[in-house]
Amino acid sequence: MSLIDYQLAENRSTEYVFGFNYRKKGVPLLKNARIGKNGKKLDGDITFRLDFSLRDDATANSKLDQGTAFGTAGQKVIRINPQIQYVISQRVRMTFYFDQTRSIPKISNAFPITNTRGGLQIDISLAQ
Image 1 (cartoon, rainbow, N blue to C red):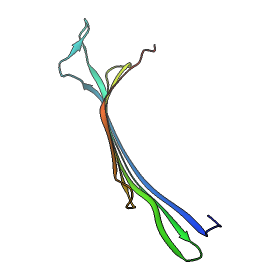
Image 2 (cartoon, rainbow, N blue to C red; image 1 turned 120 degrees about the vertical axis):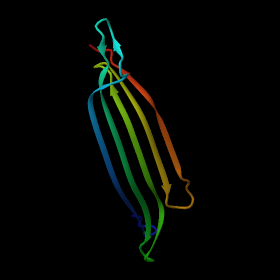
Image 3 (spheres, rainbow, N blue to C red; image 1 turned 90 degrees about the horizontal axis):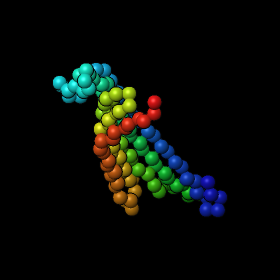
Image 4 (cartoon, rainbow, N blue to C red; image 1 turned 90 degrees about the vertical axis):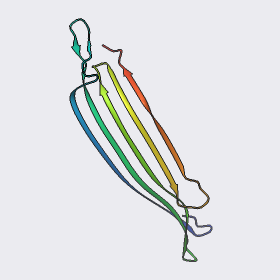
């Protein structure tokens, strides 16, 4: 609130987040693959995960002495993040991931922004 020019700034934000997760144990990485002298099968756990969020931000300024309000900022943000994680052993884990975030502005002097990343991540634990 500014008492110099009698303006009041109002921020409003709403966000919805959904997450889904499914895990299955004993899934072979390769159908007939075996390792070592004893021929141990490569069975591991696989996890499918999907995260989705929708956020709506808005900022408005009101002039208290005139009774007018106008939007000054705001955006709608949509994020989707699916990933597949495969646990090969207690020390090795692979993750395939994709992450996309889209920002759609509510005012005309801002541009839409889309950020996308994805790939394969391999985690190896060296601890005993």
